[in-house]
Amino acid sequence: MALSTKLIMRQGQSLVMTPQLLQAIKLLQFSNLELTAFVQDELERNPLLERAEDTPDPRETMTNFDDRAEPVAAAAQDFNEASEAEWSSDAFATDRGALEASLGTELSNAFDDDRAATPGEYKESFDASGLSATSWTGSSGSSGDGEAANLEAYVAAETNLKDHLERQLAFATPDPVDRMIGQVLIDAIDDAGYLSDSVLDIAARLHTPVDRVERVLSIIHGFDPSGIGARDLAECLAIQLREKDRFDPAMKALVANLALVAKRDFAALRKICGVDEEDILDMLAEIKRLDPKPGRAFGGGSIQPLVPDVIVRPLPDGSWHVELNTDVLPRVLVNHSYATRITKAKSSEADRTFMSTCLQTANWLTKSLEQRARTILKVSSEIVRQQEAFFVQGVEHLRPLNLKTIAEAIGMHESTVSRVTSNKYMSTPRGLFELKYFFTASIASQDGGDAHSAESVRFRIRQMIDQESAAEILSDDAIVAKLKAANINIARRTVAKYRESLKIPSSVERRRAKA
Image (cartoon, rainbow, N blue to C red; front, side, top):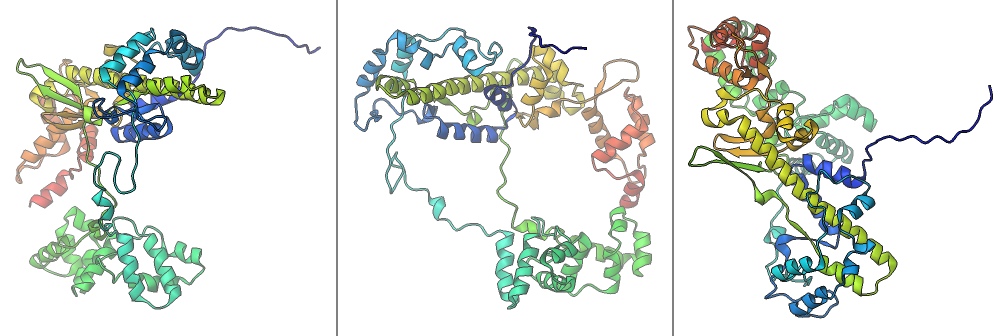
């Protein structure tokens, strides 16, 4: 059979994931902290982008692009002289067609306006704001706006656990080899204060006897805070008890059987430790006074509080007002005035190409940020509409909800809704919730009526167990019977799974604890 070469034309469709399209997708799933960091990087990289709050007051600020101050009126005059041909040229095209051609992607789902603004509209926008460019000045002693230097730069750094242990190691042993081994051990201690690597691995890595590593580790065990460098909870408690001179044989047996302590099997503990009931209760009280995580006093870094992306407030007429939290939305502007000056300055082709790329990227970013905000608001509003019973009556009335329901209601794809609800939080009169909290599985009702959400069933189980008395501890079967009486059809294994997810012990352990 002879092989031949043929030229065949085929027509097909494919999705081209350009960097700009990937950027727009990533913006949807960014948290407000990640979005702030991303926008800050773009501001540093793109000279045509600036923060809206950084735009100077036209009554107080002069433009300073070419190192000489000019009145705002002169800048506006230069802007007005830009010809229609300049603004519609390929180098600075901002209309939909040019952006699609340059970015290689479809913008029909992102842009609402197909028409490029005319120079007259740019001028109106320019005249309304007074100035669309920022004046950059600098000084060695203070910031450009005359504010005082940041005092936080002169505040002493907070001591962390690693530095605290290294200072003690310097006085603990004069041997440089032991200090080096101690440094490796300190590096292997996590934020909770436990040794995360095994002694055998550290000894093999340093090519030193295990006994010597153990000896240096025992020195670290004597450091402050007490219990530091332990390999497990039992060793951590034992170190602290030794320092208190309370690690007698009975206490040693108790620490060796922490699993029985967790189960509250006091009868077995009394038998193992050889003490009576009063002594075992005193020993357990002493164990509770110890610190199971000695490293947490120094912290593992700064804790960032959760800031809501959406705020929900009730209105007098009984409806709900849903709005975006503008404090976490970065506001950026495109500096068209600066782009016009570069065009008129007879710059080189390389400069014009660079500025064209920057202008297209800046326009794309501002459009993507606007689209992100609209999408978050649209999804959040639909969630509030679907879960109105939760906002009015509480968690027991949380409806079963999935991504498909929201996506069909607002005319978007499920993947878009999934990205929008990722790492986003909603502030409501009932507290702060992640958007994904409102999506729960459905549990059928006993009589075939409306289904119940899994979260509301968990709440009912928690409520039943909190209200049970010591004389009548509810088993999982009893909880199933009560739920079926409330028209909730659920299996026993599902109740056990929900109970374990709520970290509620079994009925046997609860009965022993309440006895």
